[in-house]
Image (cartoon, rainbow, N blue to C red):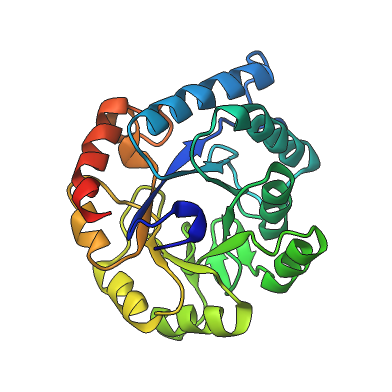
Length: 266
């Protein structure tokens, strides 16, 4: 069992529901507005659920260029979109507002999510500048809103960034569990859609044994069995999209192929 909300399965597939650029983001489609954002994500959710994913995570990947602090209008819009879509959800769901840990927790708490993903710890040089998250504030908010059951997924090596911490990745992961109370550890590749280094994933999974370890990026039908031989689960987005393009809609045939590969393992 990975988490109680995922049932008795041994391994878990969490699929991304990428929301289009939100109000306040440069790529926001003002003409389509909120209605288009909701309709597009609803179609993706339907295709993901119909083909057997175990959970869904809402993310605002298209709010480029990314920011460290969530704009009020974007955070409120994401909350409204998830709330509108919640009645159609048949599986547990999570939230990730890039790249703001407290906003992710706040939106997850308000919408009744089971988990939130973010960069909660570390120090990074990134496309957005110096990246210095604060796990304590996110935990404080989780307590204040009465959601201590909300699982916090710590992405331990940030995409679009390089760690300024010289410790080996497995030690950083172990430390995040010990000192910053991570509920799960995620291992990523350098960019969205690119796989984590197999050696990094294995070292983290062998070192961190008290919480689940997930592969966070770059998982596809060709590597998922190898990844799940090491990890407790995967978070997958790009490889389930039409033509394997992050910004395209979900392709139900790709989801089916992926879950067919996973079925014997879970």
